[in-house]
Length: 99
Image 1: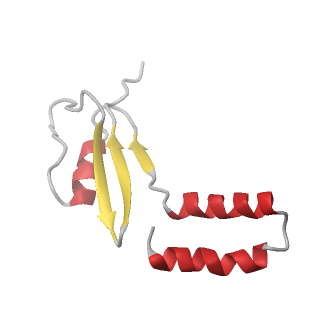
Image 2: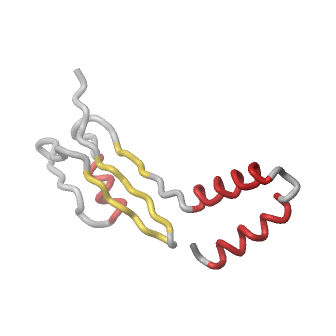
Image 3: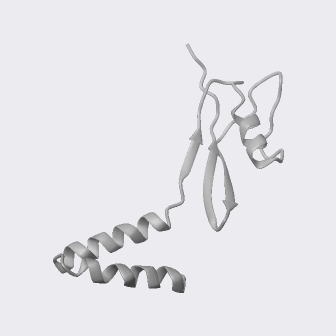
């Protein structure tokens, strides 16, 4: 972990010292987990709704195959977006056929 992150954790230890140690340890662990959380977002919808086109537009690059005639996505495709030292993963899922 970065030095600035550890400095921030150390700053929090003083105010948390009024709590029982096991509680302050839980609070600090929860903060650590949330700071480094990387979300995974699934794009779901009907076949041909434009899920793959949305992924391509968000990444400004044709990563996911698209067709005007039929659904192209046969298995989940994972794409990771990195910005400002953070990342998230988009999952382009195959379309759902309504019955």
